[in-house]
Image 1 (tube, one colour):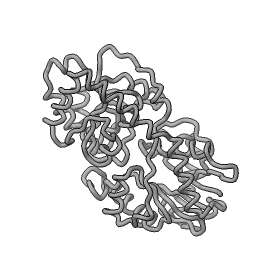
Image 2 (cartoon, rainbow, N blue to C red):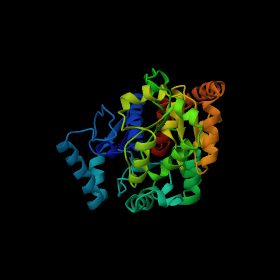
Image 3 (spheres, helix red, strand yellow):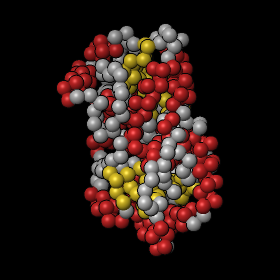
Image 4 (tube, helix red, strand yellow):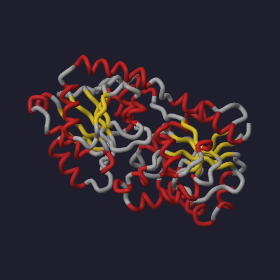
Length: 360
């Protein structure tokens, strides 16, 4: 059986989906049976380094692959069928606008925020998501959801037939389970992620400012992640009211996360919530929002707060920073919970999914 995974995110600046595709593809290839071949579109062979800010290939190779993607989107299924070269299953991303004529079609639903919270997306992103839903999701033979919350949202919001969509949790790299804390001069509370409206960082900064001054004196608030859209006002506050590290390379993240006293993630909506799982794997207590998939993913192993309530976030921060025993308890629970989210397990369940789709 030949399975082709759309890995066009490798060619672009991308965060969560790029990391998902990178780790998923590598583990699928490791676990594929002797009669199974895992390919990647467009002409993506070995993908050695995960860099969220740049393409995995030099400029000329990147442009050539993007030209192939453009040809598929403009000229249609015939070009895609030639590129797939006999694959039984094609797993599309939201950059593909055409479905194959021969292969079975599948895709991953990462979230449905463009419909639930359109105000936290650009119009271009919302338009692309709607096109993906019409051209791919509604035509797919089967779909993967990265959490049960995302699955239920897809059923409710997009009208996906429940029998066509299956929950397969994403994973966390092994490096986080073995991470050595990266030393800093002062203890710190950490957020990792893109700076954009959905991540709700202004509310976090308001809560941080509402803390007891003695608490703020004893800890740094560190924000790590690239600037996203509509972030200029928030970035001005971040640079003034916290320690801003900018984009942190993937190889440095485990140590940074492992060294945190507390990991905080007040996002308004997540499909899976990679940073939360990474922090739990690194044995760090987590405070996250009580919305979307985050309570499901945390599984009782994190402190929760209403992400729109400054007072509730501040109260949880005060409680956790003043109680080392509670932080230790949450860290231990989180480590156990994170064991459920391994890429090996995700790949095993995904291969079973593809075999069923292909009728094998």
